[in-house]
Every structure is written in structure tokens, then in C-alpha cells.
Length: 201
Image (tube, rainbow, N blue to C red; front, side):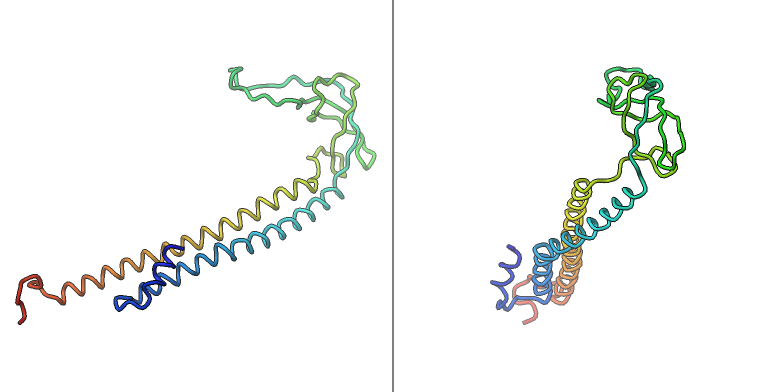
């Protein structure tokens, strides 16, 4: 904003250069991209992401079913970290060997994750499986889809603003190099004795 205001005040100055005009337009274009383009990209990307995630969640719900599993025996957790201070603790998550019946009617047995704090033989809990009865993760819900969509929208907006500012910085770098070249040509044209009184008279 300071750049735009400063260049606007000096637009009628006889020292106004073409590079100054380009700098002003670049600053204005960057401002418009940040204020208008970035929010628009954020909304569009967030909306598209939300729709895609809802479609994926709908497909997951169609392909995955919640079934009841029965604990056969708990599985003792194995930690490869011998330091109890740094070993990760997963509260509420354990493993157990369990059996369950798949949506197609077949019986399955295997080690699965359970949110039973202390699973015991005979305990029942819910797991998600595919149509063949293989354990899968829970389908994405609408809240998770909305959260990911908001993050995608913010990411798109920030990326747009960053790209606009990066382009402006590149333009400014080129303008500075061009101004330095113009100054060098002007100094060369003035000659080596430009500072001496009466030179060239």
C-alpha cells in the first residue's frame, strides 16, 4: 500500500520513469490478488475439496460395514523403545485377537485394534470391515471432511497470496537490475570528468 500511494503521488514528477510505472502496476496487481484472488481461490478449492471428500466418504460407507467382534484373547503391546520416558503412549487403544462375521457371512479371526481399555476374553466391540471381512479404517464422517476442506481452502488462499508476492518480488528484482543498468549507461555518458568545474564548456 505504501508503494502504491508513494508512486501515485509522484506520477506527475518529471523524474517519473517507466520502471516506476511498472512497479506501481505490479504492486496494485499483487494487492488485488491478495484481497480478491486469494479468497476466491480459497473458496473454490475448499468447495471442490469438500465435494470430493463427501463423495469419497459416501463410497467408503457403501463399501465398509460395522460388525461385532468378540475378543478371544488380548495381545500384549510390543514396544521397540526401551526408554519408558520416550515410549509413545496410545491411550484407549489396544489390540486383541478376535473373531467376527463378515457382511458376506464368512467367519474371520485375527489381531485387530480395539478401543477397549483392557480387553478380556468374551468382550464385544465394533470394528469396520470391507465386504470380504478384512478390517479397515472407519469411514470418513462429514465433520472430518469439512475440516480437511477448510484446511484446503486456507492452503489455496495462502498459496495464491504467496505466488502473487513472489511474482512481485521477481518483478522488483528485474526492475532494480534494469535501473542499475540505466544508471551505469548514464554515468558512462556523462564521461570521466563529469565532476570537474567547467568541463565540456
